[in-house]
Image 1 (cartoon, rainbow, N blue to C red):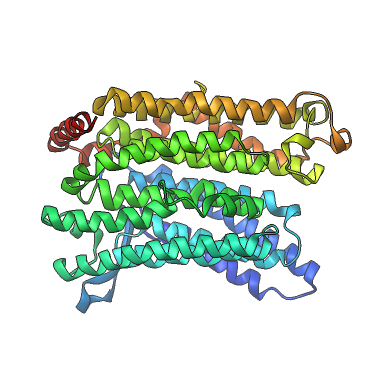
Image 2 (image 1 turned 45 degrees about the vertical axis):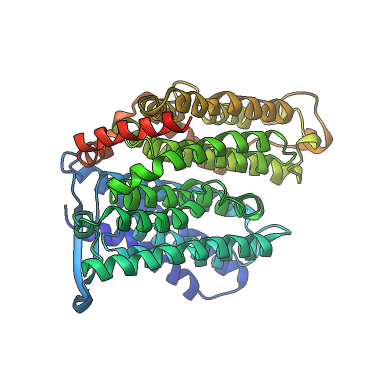
Amino acid sequence: MHPILLTLVTYLPLLGGLAILLAKGAPETADRTGRWIALWTSLAVLALSVVMWTGFDPQIPGAQYETQLAWMPNFGISYHTGVDGVSLVFVLLTAFLTPLSIGAGWRSVQGRACDFMAAVMFLETALMGLFSALDLVVFYMFYEATLIPASLMIGVWGGPKRIWASLQFFLFTFGGSLFMLVALVAMWNMAGTTDIPALMQGHFSLSVQCWLLMAFVIAFGVKLPLFPLHAWLPDAYTEAPTPTTALLSGVLSKTGAYGLLRFGVLMFPDAVHQFAPWILPLGVIAIIYAAFIAFAQKDMKKVIAYSSFSHMGMIAVGLFTLNAEGVDGAIYQMLSHGVVIAALFFCVAAIAWRAETRDISALGGVAFRMPALASLAMLFTMANVGLPGTGSFVGELLVLMGAIHVSFWLALLAGTTMIMGAVYMLALYRDVIFGSVKGTVSLLRDLTPAEMMVLVPLAVVTLWMGVHPASFTSLFDPVIVHALGAPNQEAMAHTAHQLVAAR
């Protein structure tokens, strides 16, 4: 388990991005070169990530592939990276979705495509560094670094309202991360270090934990997003180009949930039980509210955007059940949701690019002209509503198993995501894919081989996660079980009592 592997996975995309920017030639030549450099670099990163997976020992709950270099030793700050089972699955998710997003934008991103591909590469490096950081300052730097390429991709290559969407996304996330910075400085002031494993062993008083956790909930709640911090999401997802939307919904939103898990549930075990009775209802509100809003949308992409918001509410519920089943389910749902939501956005883009509209009322009968897309879209639609045999079912089942330990009503209300999701997703599928052929649909052609190469791997992973979930749960379950011991189970019972008292 040589640490150089993790360093290569983190910084190879950065080198690829710099190589793209340094590529010379006419605009068409530079764009073509940039696309190929980005694709081969991301595939190399995926291959190295799989090598890391094969060499990872899931029975070791601590970090592996560690690197620690003195950076500011007088201040207790070091460049410290490594991955445990939780980090590794998000590294794999990032490495998997990046080349598919590049493939999805191969033709759709026109004009300065080389710059766009460089931005994708820089975003991948920032995400890899974020998920592998074991020092809070390093984490914060990579977390902030994701803002720059993501905002540029929305603002430069997005739709008609791209500037407003980019500005909203930047200000919401940057404003939220200010709270994280204050918490970071406060923790350094008390502990004399920003090393995450050392801080995990720190014994902060309950009042200090509560203030610190509040700062982290605001910071990561924006990125998740947690209701009511979601105002940036509809415009950002809708206006962003398809590859960016896939990375935003598939990976970037997961950084919020990952942060809440790493710097909330696992770092502040006492305070998190004080917060759970407040966070759990917010998760349920997000599930129900976003589902109603999704059903009212007339734009295909907005339906999927609000669907994503609804499912992130389910993830918030799983994290704050504070038991192994619920937290495992939240992590699994994050992975499954990342794959399925990216696939749905790719399907929507394939139709919209051909028909030149995303208006649901202007579409119909797509299945008659695009049977391959209709088949794959059916699989992803069923996965999104939690059909057994898909990864989403496993994640939602585990979350509900965790929620039932806390409250029957919590599990019941959270479970409405399956029913309400089926209503708006099947209505969308019926209106667009079936019915009479409308408008320009009669002129559409089915998926190209390149588009199939993007969607088929997503379909395979969706089924793999549904049929053999142990391939992934075996990586992160030991970490969660080790972290949530018997004392946590007693506190969980206290949380349940508080919820019942509140009702």
